[in-house]
Structure formats: C-alpha cells, structure tokens
Length: 316
Image (cartoon, rainbow, N blue to C red; front, side, top):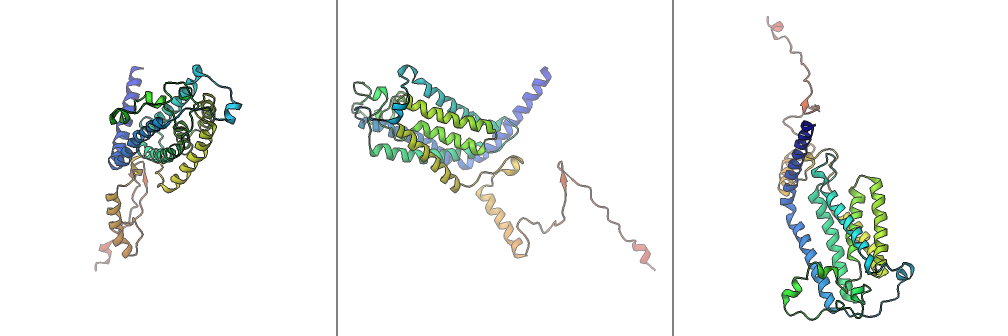
C-alpha cells in the first residue's frame, strides 16, 4: 500500500512539474496582458469606492423582484455571498486542474487571459453605467438612517486609494447597475460551458446562476434591473469578444506538441516555408527527406528491404 501511494505521488509530482514548465513558457509571453487584467480589478474597486462618496440615500425604488420575492433579512443575507464564494472558488480550482489530471483541454494561462478580457470589458461598461446615474441603494446599510449610507469627504488621497479593503467592498453603496457578482458568475459559467467536459456540471452551474440571481434580489443587495442588465450584457460581451479572440489550441491530443508558437518561432517557420513555396512545394514539406514514414509509439516502422541488382552479372 505504501509503495502504491509513493508511486502515484511520484507520478502526480511529474505531472505538476511538466505542466508548470509548459505554463511558465506561456506566462513569460502573456504576462503583460494578465498583469493588466489583474491591475484593472483594483481600478474597478477604486471606481466602486469613489461612487460611494456620491451616493445619497433615499426611499427604496419600486421593484417587481422585491414584490415577488420575500425579503431574506439581514440575518440571512449571507446566503448569496456563500453561493458566490462557492462558485468563485470552484471555478478557480477547475482552471488549475490541468496541473493534476491527465486529461487536459486548455492551458491555464491562456484561459485566464480570456477570462480577464471578458471581466475587464464588462467592468468598464459597469463603471460607465453606475457613474452615469446614482440610484439610492436598496441594501440595509445604504438606506436612510444608516451611518454607512454616506461617506464623509476623504482627508487624504491615500484614504481613497486604499479603498478600505475588504470592508469598503462589502459595504459599498451606489455601484448598482449592473451587478458585479453577476459579472463574475456569468463569465465563469460561460467559460465552463465552452471548455468544461461534464454536461451535468454545466446544467448545475446554470441552475446556480439562476439561484444566485434570485438570492441577490431577495437579499436586497441589488434591484432587479441590475440583475437583468447583467444577464444580457455579460452574455453578449462574452459572445462577441470570444469571436474576436484567437481560438485556444485543443489539448485532447497532447500537451507539449500543441504548445502555441511564439512570435519569433512563427517568423522563423514562415521564413523556412518561403523557399519551399517558390519551389512549388507545400508549406511544411521537407525537400531533403520526402519519403512518407509511419510512426507508432515513438518508433518508426520497419524499413522496406530493397533488392539490389547484381552488378557482377553484367560484367563480361
């Protein structure tokens, strides 16, 4: 039993090391875009903090969702946050499963580059929207009489830049249209819809999105319009940007052989193909070795024996 565990642990460690090597190569090329996407998460939080200074509490607006769904109350408001945390952490763990599992369908670096593109675009639209019109927040700490409903003018610039994380994020007001929780949830589920492999999990994920939407409204954290706008905006953003971005290579046939080429490698390959095209050959053909060779399990097939003519028979 101990030998079996040690052997499997050794196999797992080799998988992790091999995948880490591959992903690091991609990270060295794509790190600027990934870093920009991560830094924009701070910009988004800073914008949400800034609109809180503009927020003015008032009567809760009439809302069909509030009429249809019973109010959860402050004691059960954690339900929507708990579900969101579960979806968020589950997606992060799934994106790193190629480091452990043998079956791989994507590269983690390329997947997060795609996800951050979706998130940043949606967050830019969100910032423009909630700064255009400030609605009175329906959440309990944003209503009239709450000390957190209005923020006093900041004494220093650092007070704004620090955004009072995480309290400033959890108890923000004014950043309503459209829901940030729904942005992350819909982007994550849309991504799994395309690159995930379990149909049952895809169905469960979409059910959780619907439940998440209802819980947010029932907890009075957003108006129904914030959820509705998020549903069609995020899905449209993901649809159109996904069409513009280059498709990720499929890893179901292998891992290292399908590693995307860098710009230098692509340029070098193009240079090698130009003389071949001038000679009338197809790209990728090797003129020095044109014979077809079959390869199985890493070994070339047996060579065909060629009968050599008897030279001595022609000698008189």
